[in-house]
Image (cartoon, rainbow, N blue to C red; front, side, top):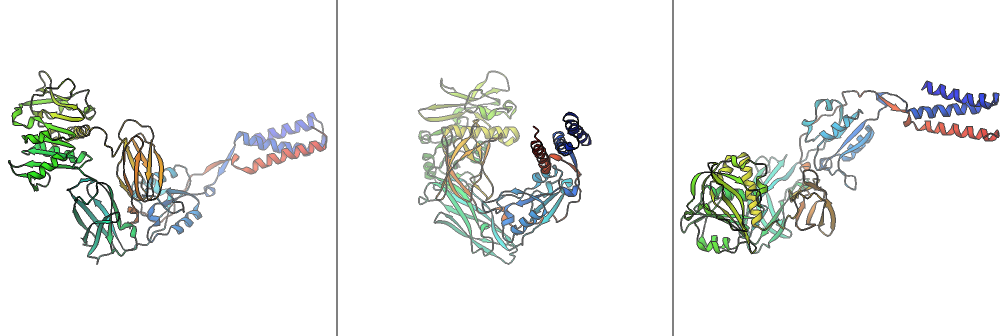
Length: 594
């Protein structure tokens, strides 16, 4: 800085006393030019000066999660405290009226980024932080905490609702409801009801022990329930608390006129049980299973409830996909189902050849994607193989080789004829893949899912190119869509809510997921290129529930290092340069100089 000033003074004196020889009259313009050139030299060199720690304005992280706006909270006091401490940064989200809207109290990432800036850090929060244990101790040491805790108030809330996403007419809908109470030890029961729009479906009572309890509501869906999408509202009656937003939960349900997938086994064996369980886990359709005890007695798979042969015939006639295992009546083979999955190896007439049959995935088939990267030939071998003869237009999904020697024989084949699809399985013992677990279980599940999808004729019309991971989300949390195809181009989505519409675009990240933020309510969505469904955003949030305070109020325990401030940040230096240059120009004009 001294060298820049000396150089500026020397040049200014050389101009006015050496070149222009103004004598004593040149002192004023020479001084103005020396000052201007000194300032410009300092700015060009971008010199800096030390800044003491007390001169650094603290960075204040303000917790804007929904708990800061719950019953008993002090949001206004928290904002005032944050403004008084320093420069405020919001962690979470705000509504249009500047109220907290963040769905979760997550602070670890924000604190780690703030500490990296080297400024004093303050966190203004109610202390109900989910990831407080994930924050490293050295980060907490640099962070001061201003605690604005909310007043704990008695509350009853529906903490969980679980049930099926799709059912068929005639099925029994079972909803399990968990109720959690806070500071209400004397409460013994509370009423609950389930509604779809203006129609009341079920009512019940939840017994409470220590303020909490669980109940299961059941309803047999009759013909009076219209097929389609329903957004069920499960609410408490006469909760008598001060936080009504925790008293209602939503559950998305699709009621279908047909049962979707029907599994019929005569008799039941390990193959049918593992297959039925896996289809129920991976398929997005209602699945029914029936197992024959003898020629006249049938039971339902899963709960072994006795059913009549007429009920089995009715379910088979209405099935979209019929899975046949064992020796069944010939009338079942004439059912006009859209897809048929026939386990040929399970029939007595097939006479499978016993042995250790190791399977190999075919390269070109609709099921090839289910086995990519998986060592199929090292999975447990099948125990039998029936002869399958693929036609000229059939495809082969798996081939089998006995004891890894000899020629490969077709084990699973498929065909598509006049819009009806059929898969034939010639091996016995594939349930051992699922029983073993690990990668073989993954392959079994992927194969079952791919087979059901292909038998249904392609992409499910309910999902289209993408589908929501959860049809119902809590307030403040985004709706997450996952991509079902390799295409990562943005996808347009049309939303129709209660009295309003909206068009948005789903931008998928590297993991194939897109995030959409919506206000609480019901939304019918339609995707570009096909696919529609129902979304629900609850008034409920876990943030409304009282939780323990995870941090204590304290000042920062570590002083930030001193830093240097560039002189270009001093706006008055630019003002001095402009003023002195203007003064020199004015003097030269008055003196008749250029």
